[in-house]
Amino acid sequence: MKMRLRANFILATFVNLWMVHTVASLSNIGISHGRHANSRFLLDNGVSRTPPMGWNSWNHFWCGINESVVMSTADALVSTGLASLGYKYVNLDDCWAESERDENGKLRGKASTFPSGIKALADYVHARGLKVGIYADAGNRTCTNQMPGSLHHEYEDAKTFAEWGVDYIKYDNCYHDGTRNRERYTAMGHALEKIKRPIHFSLCEWGQEDPAKWAGAYGHSWRTTGDINDTFARSIAFHLCIHLHPNLWQPLNHLNNRWRRYAGPGRWNGNPDMLEVGNGGMTMDEYWSHFSIWSLMKAPLLIGCDLRSVSNRTLRILGNKEVIEVNEDSLGVQGGKLRSKDGLEVWAGPLSDNRVVVVLWNRSKLRALITAVWRDFGLSPNTPAIVRDLWKHKYVSMNKRDRLTASVAPHACKMYVLTPLQS
Image (tube, rainbow, N blue to C red; front, side):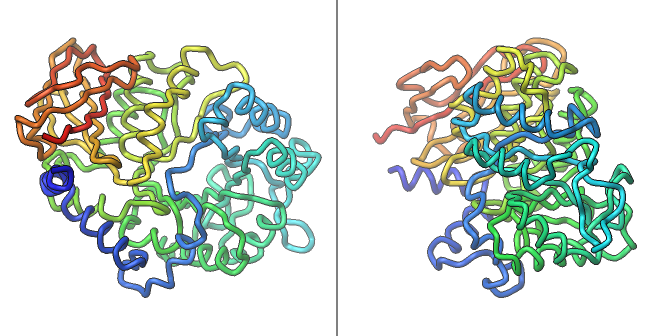
């Protein structure tokens, strides 16, 4: 019964994706995207079997980072309990380096803001059981034009990062020479292969060359959009339209399946940029939705606020263990939008142990009833299911059938896990 329910769900919503996962699992090979499986060297290093979690400096601090900010943020990840929930990466974004390379052609930390050096900073972060990330660019300069890029310095910079103990690289796409993105990102991927350190490679090429088709052969995650900002209408909702394509709510839409099938353990297609939760530009309901949808899509959960002064309300969102478990589920299947009408949306995705995650999201301006029916997930209307509310942390029903309806406030959502019962 369980296998039949799972098959029905996948056939109804994620056919192509499930086929890829099944084939890869049964034959014990990676998806090669037209290349031999042994080209999947970065997937094979064991990094990011679930979406990475941590903190990134850019959304809140922009260029205003220094070693004190980074060290105190590492301490805050531990003291708030977020590190114990899986938030392990402490990632520096742009502006950490001097504007020019040293006399030996190497990158170096900016003396005025990182006087102890990046190696000492990495040691500090590692001593707290965390991992350190860094920012680089596949061009001649980084996006702020304040640092050298890594174009034509790929191996040299990868070696430097490894010597410093870096665990994560965000690789941006500014000030390049006009060559194809894939060529420039592949160069860094091969450089990381040579240095043999297990580093998460995040390709921030903004979705320009359909990275889902090829980035999984060289890295662990790839951006699908431009930069996010801390607004609902102009960033969160709009970003998802770009990320998913406006027609992707159709369960068997070819584009939908084409993009989702590339995601999975070690290769994350769902990267619509870092989290804005806690930065103050949205309501708590909007942040609630932001975190829920990112988790369902298996997007990397990279906090973008100032954790040194974070509110308890923000911590309750970022620290919702049940929602995090959806993001980090071992099945590793990206969820998506199934239906949308007048801003009322049903999102869903398969989880391990035959479960289904469901989000009822109200993007309209008025409170409304939203209904998900069992057939949305390939379930028979007569199939009983246990329904748990992940934000209220309680069971809605131990024997629900046919459909689930909730009253949802404007820009808010309801998030549930359904566990079908064997009849």
